[in-house]
Amino acid sequence: MVEKCLMEWEIENVFTISVDNAMVQDGIKKVDKAVQIVRWAVKWIRQSPSRIHKFTEFAKAGFSIPSSSDWERVRNVCHFLKPFHDVTLRIFVTLYVTSNTCIEDIYSIRTLLDDAISDSSLCDIALAMKLKFDKYFGDIEKMNLLLYFALILDLRNKVKYLVILFEDCYGEKGVEAKKKYIMDSMYELYNDYIRIHSPSSNSSTAESTTSSSILGKRQNPDFMAPNPPLRNKLREKMKTNIVESIRELEKYLEERVEDDSEMLSILD
Image 1 (cartoon, rainbow, N blue to C red):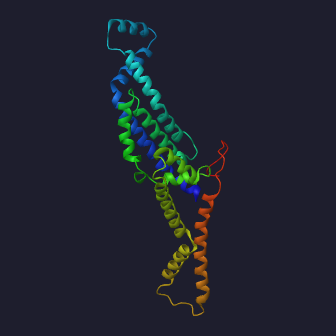
Image 2: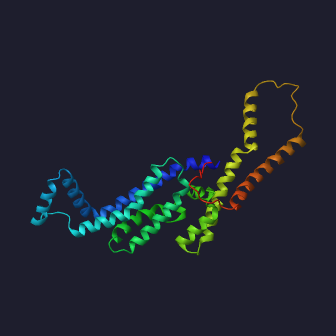
Image 3: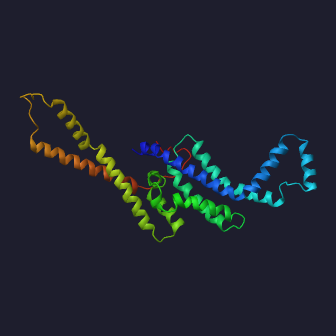
């Protein structure tokens, strides 16, 4: 189940990076002029070595070339945006599952934006990006909870790491309510999974198919229906299997977290 879920949740991870890229574009618009000037200058110089000399002459003549402040602004923006670039590469270039790390990336970006807002040279960029960020990730209720489930199912994280992320981001106030909201939703989804794949569901499907196939036909007189007490016993066994499956999830979450390792395969 865990392997199948993690693979399916990769789709949501790709959506998150699309929002991330759109957010970066909103930020770049705030420094569009400086970026354009520097980009034009670099492209022009690279076309031939002789243009370096011409570029120097243009600078002395006072033509519109990148100023010191333009270079400094673009340099700061590049340093600021590099983590966003790294996150995109980590998800799109790698061949392993990354949905279990997506929440970490989101919370890292939140911290990065909050720090940049307090920096006068990046404040306007960060504020523009924060608007897009809050639209999709500002509150837990706005987010796809599957990403939280993937984080929890990672045997190196589980619920303890979720609480640490919440405390770091929101402080201790309201952590329990947020945790309860996610865990209740996770158990609700898991219980649906159990109902769908439990023997009782499969049995109901089989009975429905059998009933349809014999509809309008004379039944074999030798056919004997199961003894009611035995059928009741079967129903009780099915209920027990569902309860045991739910306890299986609880047992997994209560076990200690595993140490992180480069050799660890989340799917294995």
